[in-house]
Length: 192
Image (cartoon, rainbow, N blue to C red; front, side, top):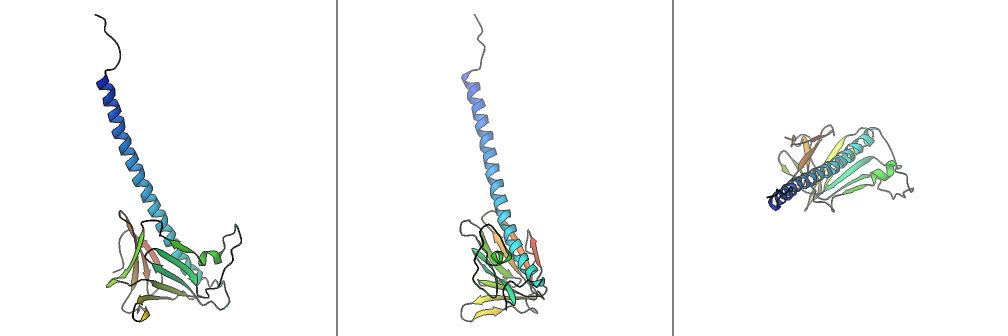
């Protein structure tokens, strides 16, 4: 009787099953990591935009005559960064200028990311406006109350506000100090 060399059908099927299981685990980890990096990149973009507004105000960078402050409009799916002169801007092709940055809108409509705002005493009604006075960097924060309009958050009762940037699996926080205007980013809410 001659002994044939090779693999049995069962051995081959077991190897294929093992490869399929390992491949599924690898693809799942890759997709999870990609989602996390995408989330963190968008979060860092939001943090940078908010910090740049304060930097422009403190540096007394005037882009339009008569402009007295810089602002951030915060909505659930959009952050708009603007100067208070709010004048039209014509973009030079291929050149990113300060003016282009200040009329920039960070849209979250094509993602599952959302932003919520609040203080230590509760959730703020959207949209929330944060204004930095030119040259001093003094901050004024307003929430929108439906019957009244914009209502300023008093510095003696509201020390800071938080922006909760989140999706189904991740969340990060951006705290804006209502006294100094400093912006900090955290993995958890420190605005208490």
